[in-house]
Image 1: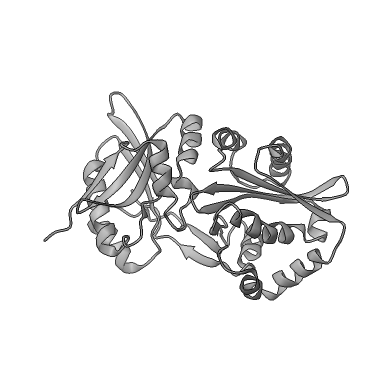
Image 2: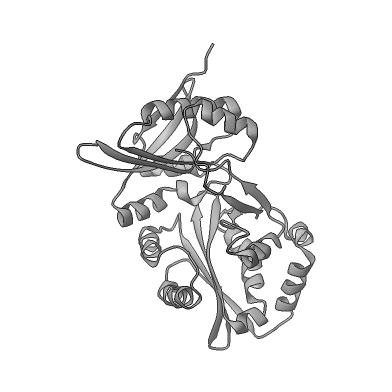
Amino acid sequence: MPMKCDITWNKLSVAEWEERFKTIKRSNVLQSYHYARAICKLQHQRARWGVIMIDGQEAGLVQITEASFLFKLFHGVILDRGPLWFDGYGGAAHISAFFKIFNAQFPQRFGRKRRIIPEIESGMTIEKILTQCGLTPVSNSAKYQTLWWDLDMDDETARTNLKSNWRGALKKAEGRDDVTITWDDQGKFYPWLRQTYVQDKKSRGYSGVSPKLLDNIALFSTLESPMVIGKASIGECDIATVMFLCHGQSATYQIGWSSEQGRNANAHHLLLWQARSMLRSKNIKDMDLGGINDETAKGVKKFKEGTGARSLTLVGHYS
């Protein structure tokens, strides 16, 4: 008997969505409710929150954003890093059933632009299934890569898994008695972080999240989904910072900055390592270290890989 799949949209309250979202292991920030509110406010989009039903049972969650005009003649729909599955779901048959119904609800047509980046690890079998479901691969797009760091692992094992040069830098940082680490989940450090980030981004010319989006994320952060900022200082001088976005039982490493003094003190290694226990205290079990690539940020990729985190390459961009 064929598997029956449906998506019920916008039937849950925020509390009901969050309750279900918290059960999903390695949920990403792009599928979180508070991120959708932030991006929609900035880009004048609207969001839909869907519960995936398989044979009458709740199987997962999916969040999309969309925009339209001229009575929906022109319509854009974005599915970034979804869907997310509950335990027992997410196999090839479930993925196929989901994208068949998704494609039926949002078919390709004149005036509609679709951006679909499935949260599915790359593999030829899955990629064939997606095309059979009506999705078209965007040939000139790079596949998204990230790293997931297991925070539930005990620190002794995690330290053993560190690359030797990363572990050596951490040991040097821990051996200093002049570096102080402080943490904030109430937004007190945010104005300082924003100013520091904007200045650094401008002076070094790298791409990154826009300050306006950061402002909206800060606006919609809550006690259950906080923005956590860590700061390293020597005396009165701030030398490094990190910012994490918490969502469900996961967190995303969003921003990192170090001054020359901070780099000499290996402050970023110490911040990231101490973030393990800080985030665990908030019931966070995994850290998404963020996108990595070899073309524009080799140094960042090498630093993140030094943690021993597991790499993940998604199937790619579809329309």
